[in-house]
Every structure is written in C-alpha cells, then in structure tokens.
Length: 79
Image 1 (cartoon, rainbow, N blue to C red):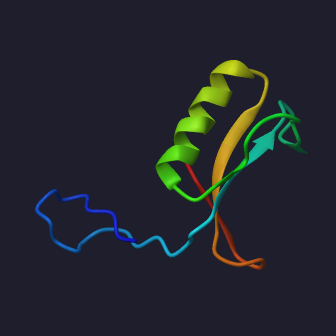
Image 2 (cartoon, rainbow, N blue to C red; image 1 turned 180 degrees about the vertical axis):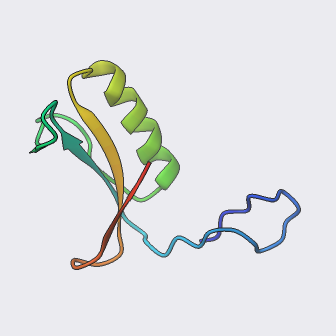
C-alpha cells in the first residue's frame, strides 16, 4: 500500500507494509493499559486513526496511539 502525498497519481510517498493496525492505550503515567469494551484491531490505518481520535475524546485520561504491526518482533507507532 502506497500513500500518495503529492496528489498527481505518482507512486512517490511512504510505503506502509503492515496489513494490521492496533490501538495501544496508555494511562496518565505513561504505562500501558487495557480498557474493556473498545475496539483495538483494524485492517485499515484511517479507520484506526479515526477510532483513536474518538477514544481520546471519550476517555480524556488515556492516550491512544495507532501501532502498525509488521511482525511480532518489529512494531512502529504511528501518530
């Protein structure tokens, strides 16, 4: 999947290899937390970012980051 930042249809941009995105939750102290009842696994980056923004409004004491999971060893946080 290639993101076209230039708008001219060219294949320039950032290549995202991951097919799975997850939302990681942190509490006010920066520790990883789990909230029951929220959706955390996504196949689409834009949907994951949208849910992350929604959860930030609903739970102001927590931070929600979208993480791209390439494999079990390498994880990249996208904001």
